[in-house]
Length: 194
Image (cartoon, rainbow, N blue to C red; front, side, top):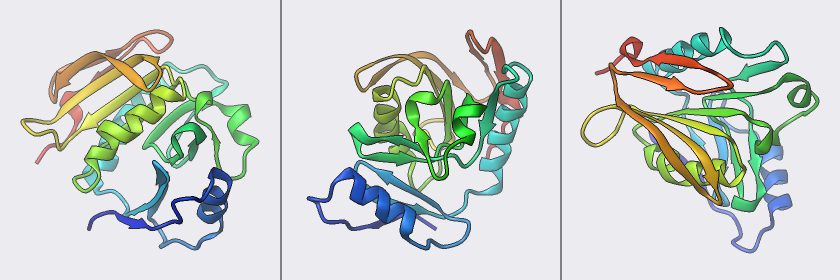
């Protein structure tokens, strides 16, 4: 199943988009985001997608401070890019995130992780990367199971404007180190492949 977009009035402002996003009843289990001003509804991810996210989460829990948390369905807002994004994983301070009802400013995140799905891989590679960089999130880990040649993992960092610098790119099977404050190695050999 692929993602569905919901048309909006092109002149609609950020606050109107957020009200629409918050107020609609979406299909249970779906992932609903605003990507570059367009409401996008995606089906629940496949099992191997979730296994990859769980493996990364397990590694991250061993290194994050007690006052940080790893969130799986936390919406992060990037108003400057008309984005309300729901990364597969968000590492952020627990207290600030616990105080929100529906979403948090993306700038609270220390790391976001996206695992691509076939139907929306380009969003993760382009639109979301630009939004996360614009928000100043220090690290973006992209697990691209649908890369053109072979599944890859890219760690992005040093955001400037809406652009990240690729810090590490590895094929599935090769380790990826996320530097301080994490100082953790993600063992991509644990990731399932087709």
